[in-house]
Length: 127
Image (tube, rainbow, N blue to C red; front, side, top):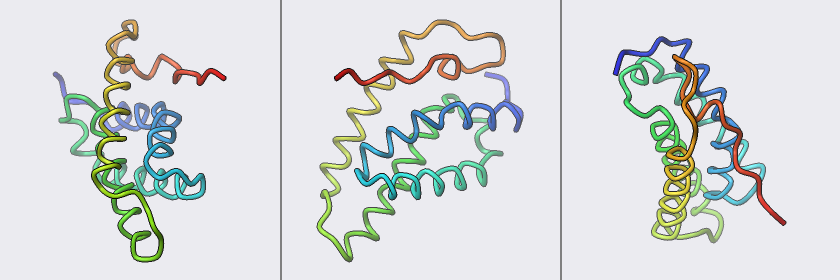
C-alpha cells in the first residue's frame, strides 16, 4: 500500500464522521457524550495524522481510536455514575466492528485514491 497524504487522510476522516458518530453512540449511549467523544476522537486522529499515512485500514484505525476515547470517557464517568462494565462495552464494540467489516466488504470499488467506505452512505435504521 502506498503512503497516503495528509489530505487523503483528512478527507477520509471527514467522510467517516456519520459512521464514527453512530459507533460512538453505541458505546456511550448519551447524545451529548457522543458529541464530546467524537470531538476528542477527531482531535486524537488529527494529532496522529502522520501515523495514519502508514495505516493499512484507515477506517479500522479511526474506529479503534474512537473505542479508546469512549473507554476513557466511561472511565471518567465511572467515578460518578453507574455505567456499562468494560466487558459489555468491548462486546458492543466487537459487534459494531463486525457489522462495519461486513458493510465494507459489500461496498463497491471507489474512484482511485478514495477509500471505498467514503463513497457509501451509512446504513439506515429501519423502523
